[in-house]
Image 1 (cartoon, rainbow, N blue to C red):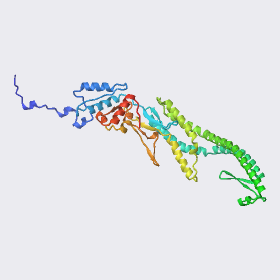
Image 2: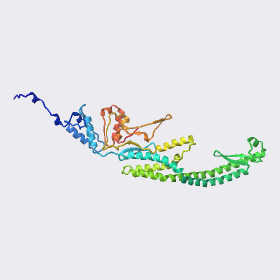
Image 3: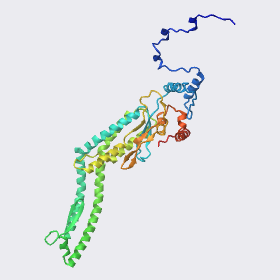
Length: 400
């Protein structure tokens, strides 16, 4: 064994600060951490994150303080940046079964665009429909239509009035009802006491005439109802004919602006068709407001709000600002934060909800990307762990 004598300065490693290329260590905070002594772990993690097949999950073990979470997050973001941005996820009103909203996938950014378009459509409908239904062209057509049917109704009423007059009854309308009164010798209406004081034989004749008149009124109403129905159907068809070009134009603008091909394009097209049909079926709630309507106007406004709510877009996952696949770090894997939730609103002691109150959880937000969970926190909640296992097995996410 050979002993060497070293001077004190030879036992110290001295590095010139200027040779490091930094002013101080604060500049290193944003630099990626190296996998010091963990080359195999890095290779395994990178391989696991690159698996594009379903039903593959990466399970990471390590000592506390080893940097396993930080290093994995760093690698997740690196790999995610090379992947395509996943689609936006929306919920739409289901006109056939409202309790089963329709899910829609759209290219990133187009979900927000669709939501903006539908919000603008609602504003346009509230402004344009009353104006068109109050315009001179529509008024002239509707008045001509009503005049045609009113002529038929007037002829039928004139026949009924003549029938009543021949039997000494005066016939008139009151609050939408037909009222008849027995007339005396001088053509004046008899009071109830005067009618009762008539001779028995005459009262019998009056009762018989009254039965005949009632039967004739029933026949008149049977004749008038189809006329009234045809008139209402004609006016409804005229309203639809007036508003349909507006709807076709607005919805076509939406279709043209959503230019990118989407996987659910057929579903979106079907939804927009149903929106047009629903608007045409509910044109009454868009009618010109009547300042003197009072309570009826309040009811109409509530109905209008309900109808317009069906045309909203619930954008539960908006990936417009992403540049790659999403990376979600779930530090609080509770039932709602992980699987999503459905919110409720209390109205008169009744809990109500609809498609617009569905909220996405981390599993849905991480769709097409990566989600990091801490197993120990999952195992502390048996309900969450059981549902996560069921989700992993079936691939179906049920929001409750």
